[in-house]
Image 1 (spheres, helix red, strand yellow):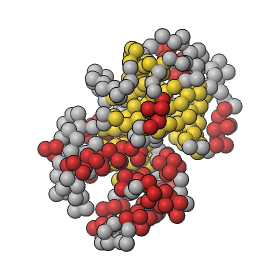
Image 2 (spheres, rainbow, N blue to C red; image 1 turned 120 degrees about the horizontal axis):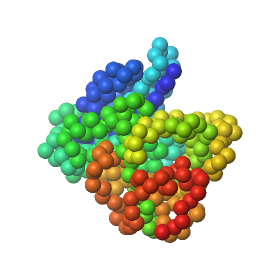
Image 3 (cartoon, rainbow, N blue to C red; image 1 turned 45 degrees about the vertical axis):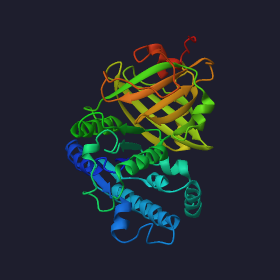
Image 4 (cartoon, helix red, strand yellow; image 1 turned 90 degrees about the horizontal axis):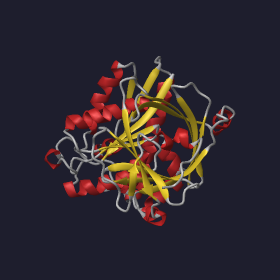
Length: 366
């Protein structure tokens, strides 16, 4: 049985409700049993439990996080007892969405009282798909009429959208779906991204990769929407048409482990599946490491900016350059780079800069 748990999140009036219906139709057709964990905040607020009905926002957030986790546990338990080969659990917002509605002290208190860890709560989901609020780039579509719990003005919606993006930044599989196309195009891009994550044959993902000048790391680390992650990536023995690797990701002393399998359809398109593994499984997989390739060690800076998700990789072998990656829905799409990033050249189609090749030999610095 294959059980995947994803989050559909984003700012107010981003299209989540319509997206849920589309997800149900599309993935049921390709053999998935699709389960939906309903949005907890809407349930509580419409039921009379809200930040303004409790003695404090902190007490309300404890209720919301507790209920969110309990609901997800029940859905996961139910999934394990269903007669289905492929199950997709779709969470209408996840635990980290609550981070956007608390200050740092409140969030720390909620995590401590409930015995939770921020990185573990963020990374427990297999993938996160962030729909940008209509207030950013599609103001004519912004409305409060379809959700009785929504009260934000467009300006407030943009602020909430930014805080939500910051709360999820650092997740190993975060995709941002903006308003650069029509709403129908937005939904199609979301479906393509989910399909890519699930590794369905019809799903494609386009990746752009750029060689950049060594960035100001101190500036990156000071940015509120940037997360630093240390990564060790090891390639395993595999057939010629597939690439299998395991990764160890460490953030703030907390380690998570993953195994991924990737099949390339072109230089820029691929189908990839990935799953979390235990530390014990990770250690066992290392016994299958390809002796012809070394483990890649790098520090990744995950940055949300320009309504997009960027990954900047810094390698210990290089002192003057790094690599920036961004996933796009259209190979011809114009790319806007983060402020302060100096691009040397695009290396999307340069095989020397693919991670699989970097495991064999690092190119000389430009």
